[in-house]
Image 1 (cartoon, rainbow over the protein chains, first blue to last red):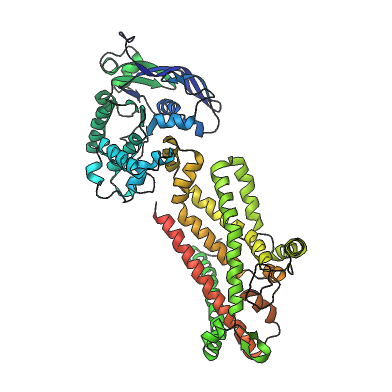
Image 2: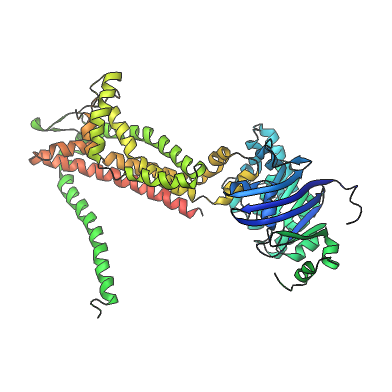
Length: 257
Length: 285
């Protein structure tokens, strides 16, 4: 990798091992993610890419029997240290899920949920941020006249953008996306991809995807994972045109996976 | 050799299923045919709203009993619903699966304890405590509320747990991922999503409380009056039927059947509301 000394790293994963009980799901993973870049994680099912993503906002804490060793720093803070406030971390590192999961509340209540959780009650402030966040997720025009309708009434792609708006409202630095387009049709997918490229101006994005073309379209850096190991991590162009590792090359060219 | 063919099995099972429905129909028919004529003869207003119940002088006003049943049932809800819902939230959202595995069946076992045992404990333990600390006869509305409140716990807890656990995991994950605490997630998302099931659990609990007879007879004191305080002795609709049926004749007997009609209608209404609430819950997903 060429001259990265000047780049600003926001995520730094060092020698990360993760066990589900006796099963080791991540093996000595290292990864760096740059600020305002899209980093994609690809690899066949069960390679640990989603698990790795869920380490970054400690969603794996919810699963019993998970043990983690190694280090993850976000903004130079060790997120697994004892002094870390997990709820603060999750406000700073937001997550978009595979299936759109708006709450069974109104569109408005969905967007301001994170703010209310953080204790903000001021109506004007909530209204302002709600509009800004919905605009940021390219959803304002579609929903501005029905903010009190249930979020679950929207079509799937708008639901997913509602989930993105919900994140933007709490102004995270990092947005994690766990196969955000896997339940969407190609047109909706394209829209989300365009949105991601817009969002990276202000946010750092890490995306897990099954779809190699998607990784090559949107990401700046790509990590290829296999059976819990980070096989190769490089600029996306390099991974897709001249991968250094034989395994990566075989996966990219569709020999397995 | 096959003794009964597939068709035969089907027919036998259908007959057993029908017998359950037909017994419900027969009971309804019997109670209504015995009770309704009395209500028309005596006058619904006189029957439901008059205060005096004295079969010897031909007075059959069940208003005190209706009020007693209502108060006992509401009181049971005040005791049982918060305890039950809090318990359900703890077990489904906070407790480890092992604790859930031990505690939930134990709570459901509460439903298997005969009501006479609840009544016995009420008489021996609860009534003296109330008498000595709060005054009054001890056997009272308050004792009835507490005992019934405990008796409806299994219903409230197990149906609430089922509806809370039916809330998709993705709601919880979405909330936690926005930096909400478990408690914020529980009361802002999970409980809201499970609301209709929780309401159904309370209504089914109410149905159980208003229909309960033995425990109430033992602990509530059974004087016919409209309660002025929680320490008064009261007689519920169910208790009235059970206490007097053995020696009632003529009009008196018909009046008791008519009381049964009123109970039947109340419980039917409660159960219908509960099943609508449960259906709403299922329709939402």
